Length: 321
Image (cartoon, rainbow, N blue to C red; front, top):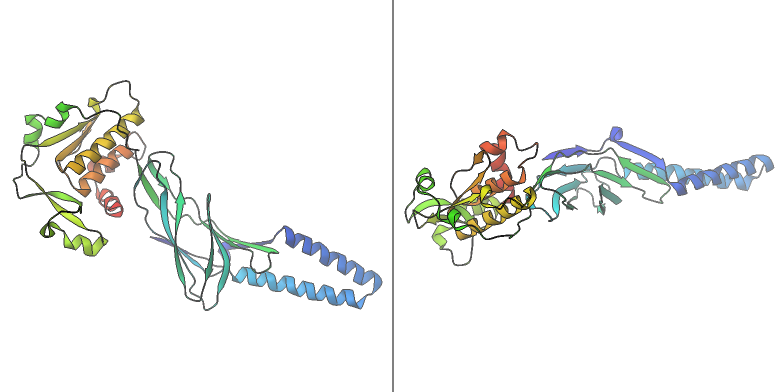
């Protein structure tokens, strides 16, 4: 989580188009008052100038002191909307009105009571797999009368959303991959009817004793413990099982679909890519680890951290779960 408090050094203010017209009116009134020594013109000039100064102060104070907090984003599939959670806090004793939250194509109008915190989600489209960074965030306001425009420096939250390939069912899984060779079966951990084989999302009909209650307390989502009934069943999802005329993105989309099928079926499975293969496994962590390899395949980000399944894998998997 990253935070940004708006101080005087992070705030800018300039007249709007209406504000510049307002300035021209003041200049015209000043010229009339001086040339004709008109007391009424002087009085109107001083009143309007006072209104302008007060409006500038109110516009400035409407934004200063607000605090932005950005939370981690969940992983999604290509084509879905990337959601970046953001909290805007007003820790002052005054109200704030008509504050705009701006981020790329996203914009939202906010109003705050004293001490109020508002949570909102920046929603942006996804166009390619891999990491999508949250664009810079700005706060701005023209309150109260719209003759001054106040805005903040660009807040770089540093949050990223991991975008998995779009699942596509282009071809059935080859039977040779479904059966698995004896060598692959011996390489994995063989488990019995009541041996632990990972975690999975709770489904209607799962036994109550199989629910993992610590995960419910932590994530507020039902997760079931998964057991492997057949020690010999295994699934190898291989890059090389896809015909050669399919391009790279379609291959990754097909592999993503096969990983989804394998996870839903509850069997042990592995992902075999050129020069790299994951271990056999199942459950939420293994599922997202395989999808992360597909998401970053061929990108600059797919470095040793992806292949070795380091600490960052676990963080992303917990966020998606």
